[in-house]
Each structure stands twice: as structure tokens, then as C-alpha cells.
Length: 419
Picture (tube, rainbow, N blue to C red):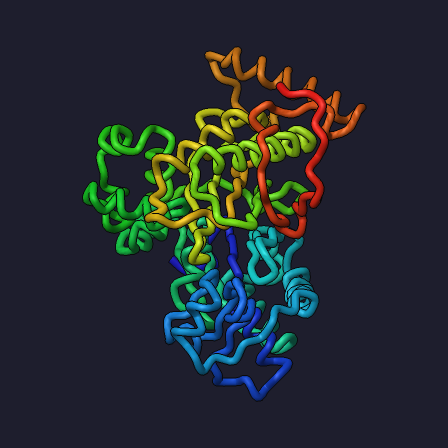
């Protein structure tokens, strides 16, 4: 069936080697050279993006700069120029805007576009996608890969398959989706990282098709009902998420790096509790709840790892978010003798209360925690953030600055009351 027959047309556009590509545009002498954009290899920096020439040596995003330098000693290093990258990203966005207003940016270099309503104006969705790719190249000098499908998950997988300058169409219909996904490795499923992939492979699931053909009862017994349902749906190409164009964020996160690496799990949990407290307060301030939690860890060797877990009920209070992160920290991660240089949490799968199906058996303890949390929010709004805090967080912690948007004060806050 031709791509033009797709009734719901979702396009995922991903700019190839974006930061490195902008550097080559601005400095043509870099063309064909192994270019790495990131922190200096003499520092504790990390790789932001590497050109394909550098990737041939094994250099990858988020790799420690020192490691990348050993793998590719002839690399040309460029410091990130975020203002310039944002400028080029806006040029690409201007191309998108000609064809649809249903745009969900994921970062400076990728976005989802819902082309369903554009077909009557501009023709078949696959032709629109090709025009977008051509116009991006002609007007910005950048190269994009794209995937077109009936939903976001399939479109994202498709855009990754034939880089650079790729274009992959997944024909409509569940049978076509299953056929497309079946031979792919399990780590192509959203939420399956290296550790989860290892668990699935030990259970005999090596490809997406293996999961699609699995017995649901077996999956549920091994993975739990929430994770089993999530993976089973994706393996069949099912994803009902809309392209979100509003102000709702994709996730709400908090992370901190430390002056000295942490080795003690109790100390790590205190940091995660502080992150969960901050995230829960911000969820309530936006009238949102999260259905998933992602744990972020950067080790002493600068490798970055994530673990993700779905919650039984969407929440906007601290305890379930913290408990999920602490559980992943203690049961799903092996530090192998290294310390934690950075810890963080991201609340994901964000929903407004009216999007949540009410449970037949409401959790009264969760409602009590929510009432307490709202009361604490009112106290903080009236008397300041440091008016009230948790006793466990009164213990002294030594940290450096956090992420730029979450930079804590250098001075230790004065706390007046613990809860």
C-alpha cells in the first residue's frame, strides 16, 4: 500500500550529526575530518556530537572526552556553540511551519510533525516529507533523516534506520508495523536499555518479533504487568500518543553533580529524595502527574546510564517517585566499584488529572500524601522554600553546581523545621 494511503501521518525528522554539521558549515576546512564537539579531553568533559568520520573510530555522544581522544587522537575538537545551533534549529523550524502547525520539538535537532491535516493542501504525506528534507538541505545546508508512519514510535524507529540522509516509510496497518519491527533487536523498543535488553535476552527475547509472539502471561510473570503491557503494545506497533504542540513538557527532571564521587548508597538516596521532592512540587505547580520515572547516573569514568520504570498510578507526590528511583538504584544497577559523579531523576509520561482514568479502588494513603503535599506547598508559597523540609534532607550534603537550569545555591540553606 503506498505511503499516501496513511490516514494518520506522523513524521519524525532528525538532523544528522547536527552540532558537527553546523561546525563544518561554518568552517568548511573541517569537511571530511573527524570532528568532535564537546568538552576538552584535558577536562572532565563529555562528547556532545561526533561527525561520522569520528564515529568510525568508536566515538559516541555522552562518551568521556578523554576516552574519545584515546580512540581518535587525530580528532579536531570544537567547543559547543549553543546559540549558533539554536539559530540553525530555528531555520529548520521555519521549513516545518510551512507544512503544519502540529509540531512537537524534542530537541534542537529532532521533532515530530503530524502531517495528517496537511495532505489535502500539499499532497501525499511521503511527498511532503521528501519536500521537507530537500528544503532543509537547500535553505540551511543541513542533512536530515526522516521516518514516516502512523504513530510516533514507528516514525522514530524508521528515522534511525538509514542514516545519514535516510527516509523510511512504514506502510499503514498493524500487520505492516509488525513485519517492519519483527527483525529489529529488542533495544529498539522504547524504554529498553542495555540492562533491560540483557534481561530480555536471558528470557529468550532477542528481537521485537520474539516479544510480539510471546505469551502475555509469561511476560507479565517475568516483567510485571505494566512493563509487559508496554513492551507487548510497542512490539505490535501500537502507540496512541498524539503529537503535542502545547506548553506541556515531555518530562520534568532534576539532577546534581558532586564535588567528590559518591560511593555510599544511603547518601545517593538522600540526593534522589531531594530530586524527587523538587520534581513533585513542580508537577503540582503545573497540575500534572507522572506515570513513569527515569533514574540518571554518571559514573566516575563519565559514562552515563539510565534506568526507567512505569508507576502503577500516575502521581504528583514525592514518595512514589523517590521509591521508584531508589528501587532502581539498588536492584537494577551495578556500580562495579565506581562512584556516582552525577545523580538525577526525570518524571515522564506526564498527564493532567482529567486524562487519568479513575481507579475502582482509590489509594487512600496516596490521597492523604497529596493533601499533605499541597499543604506544604501553601506554607512554602507563603513563608519561603526553606520554611519546611524533610528530616532526612537535613543531613549535610556536599555538592557542586547542578545543571544550568537547576543550579543550587553555593550556601547551605537554613532549615527551620523538618517533616
